[in-house]
Amino acid sequence: MKRTLGYAVIAILFFALIWVWTLEVDSSLNYPEFISGGALFFTIFFLCLFNIRKRVPFLPLWPARKWFLLHTVAGFLALSLFWLHAGIMWPNGLYVQILVFLFYLTTLSGIVGLVMEKVYPNLLTRIGLECIYERIPRDIAEIRNKAETLVFECTEKTGSDTLAQHYLETLGWFFQRPRFFINNIFGGQNAQTWVMQQCSILERFLNASERDYLDKIFALAEIKRKIDFHYSLQTMLKNWLLIHIPLAAAVMTMVVWHIIVIQVFFN
Image 1: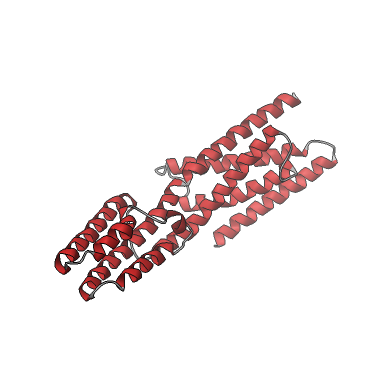
Image 2: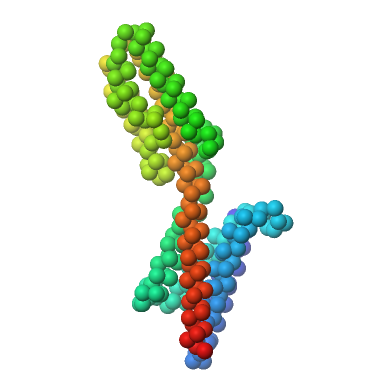
């Protein structure tokens, strides 16, 4: 916390320095955009270095945790410098609007990633089940096979197909693959509510022996629900960079082109 506060103070002081500098340049009838634009380019370039650092973890550079903190603080600094440089939230002109749109999308994706990095690990720990992402398809297949075995066994031993019919019509859908993806990424409980509702509806039509099998299937469904939760959150954590990094690269490309255009125009 102290380190984060220290980085934030440095960023605020840097922004204040650039702001005062631009005011002085503007008062002398020069171009303050060069000052704010140069600071913004430096900050964006520094943000891009974080991805390079992640690709070469073997080099004796700062720990990834410090880089992440710096990247976060620098991201908000870049947004502040961008508004200082542009002077308005949404400029005129198609070319500039494309640049602004990409910058905002990149910033938004970065904020989403920051929230996920802070919130999701706690949610995954709280659910009480450890799960390896690459093994999730196999784990779900094993649970589905156990549930279907219980259904067949119940039908054979009780002579009733009530549980089997309900499984084919409703519960089988749940055991086929990960479900409730959207609800899970927002920390919802729709999966748990749905499973409990389906089991409670069926329970009134079963005898004591069939209810024992239903309880076992419900226990499997609870494990499956937790695996689905892991799948949703881990998928987001692993794949959000596939959006953030290309957007950042597009912004950097547009910024370089913007600098070239400015240099040509003033020369």
